[in-house]
Length: 181
Length: 201
Image (tube, rainbow over all chains, first blue to last red):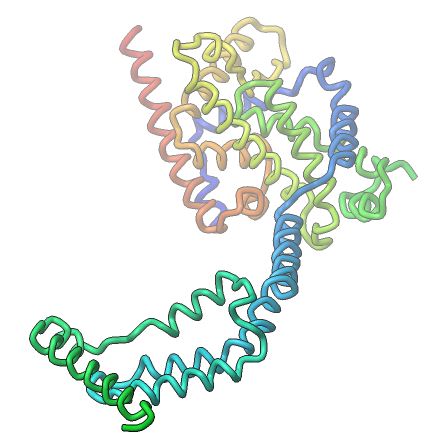
C-alpha cells in the first residue's frame, strides 16, 4: 500500500516512461570493458598499499622504538652520575633553605660544608658535568628567598648592620683561634 | 557449469575463493548498468566508463569484507555511485581552474535516455517518442539531485524501494519521501511545459 502511494504516476508521466528508456552504452566501446577492469586489478595488486591500518601500525612501531631508545640512551646518564653529587647537593640545599634570620655561624657552616665535600668520593673538580648535573648544582646553590627576606634586602640600613655583624663574627672567631689570647 | 547461469551469490562465493572467471561473469552481468548509473551522475560516457571500472576494482578487493547475506547488485551500485560522485567532484574542481567558460563541457553532456524504438515506422510515432525523451530529460534536470536519482533508479533502472535504499544508503522512509516529492514536482514541471507549448501555438 505504502509503495502504491509513492509509485502513483500521473497518466502523462506513465506515457512518457513507456516511450523512453535508459540508453545502452555503445557496444563497440564496451568490448574492452572487462579487460580494463582486469588491468586495473593487476595494477592495484602490484603496488604496495598504504592504507590507514598500515600508517597506524608504522606510527605505533616507531613510537615504541623511540621509547626504547630513550630509556636505553638517556636515562642511565641521569642515574649513574648524580649519586656522587647527592650529599653535596643535600648539604647546600639544607643551608639555602634556612630562614633568613636564623643564620648559623660561619665556622659551623664551613665545617658542615667540608664534611659534605669529604663525603664525596669522586673528585668533583676533576670531572666535567653534564648539562643536567650543572642545573642540579645551580639549583642547589641558588638561595630561595622568602618574600619577607626580599623586603628586608631592600633595606640598605639593615643590610649594612648585618654585614657589620658578619665582620664581628669573623673577627671573634679569629681571636678565639689565635693562640695566646 | 557456465558462470553466466549461476546466481550472484554463487558467483560471489567463487570469486571470494579466487575464481577470476566468476568475477568476470559478474562484471559482464552488470557492466552496462554500472556505466549507465555512473553516466547519470557524470553525463559523460568516458568518465562513466572509468568510474564504473574503478568501482568494479574496489568491489573485487572488497569481496573479502562483503557479507554473504547482502545483495551484491545494490552493494555494487552503491560503490559505482560513490565513485561517480567522487569523479564528478574532481571534475568540478578541475573546472574551477579553467578561467574561461568551457562550452565543450556543456556540449559534452550526453543523454542517458533514448526513445524506445517504435513498433511501426510511422514518422509521427518516431517524432513523439523523440519529443517524449527530450521532455522527460528537461524535466528530470530540474529535479533536486536526490529526487532525480531515486526517480531514475525506480523507473528506469527498475530497482525496488528496498534496493534503492540499500544503494543510496538512506532509510526506506526517506526514499519514499523523495519519490513522492519527485513525482509531484515532475507533474508540475510537465504541466508547465504543456502550458508553455500551448501559449506558443
